[in-house]
Length: 115
Image 1 (cartoon, rainbow, N blue to C red):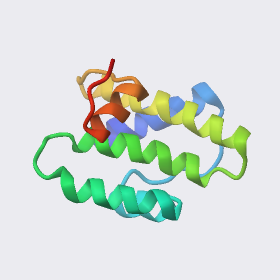
Image 2 (cartoon, helix red, strand yellow):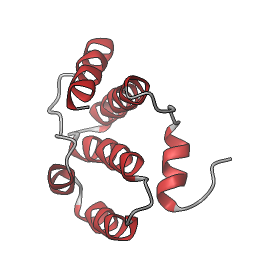
Image 3 (cartoon, rainbow, N blue to C red):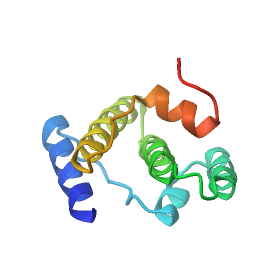
Image 4 (cartoon, one colour):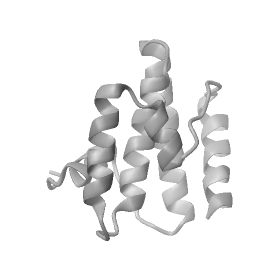
């Protein structure tokens, strides 16, 4: 699976031209990259996740947020989000799972149902 993730990141970089720093997709790296106000929510949701089977969606959502929080300005933030959306979609496709929109991921993470 690690190879699928790296392949997805490489393909997303090529597709978007994204050259900024990439936050590793690990709990520790994501937590460290988040703004303080987001970090508290991240760890609260992580603690509540349990065995729900939603860890991948949780990680995808917060990895995207960590990239956005790490961006130095609004243009870089938009590029980071575009890059993350493509990387996550490519990874989901390579892993044989369904692809989800960011709205669906946000709804899942917040416990709501997507419209």
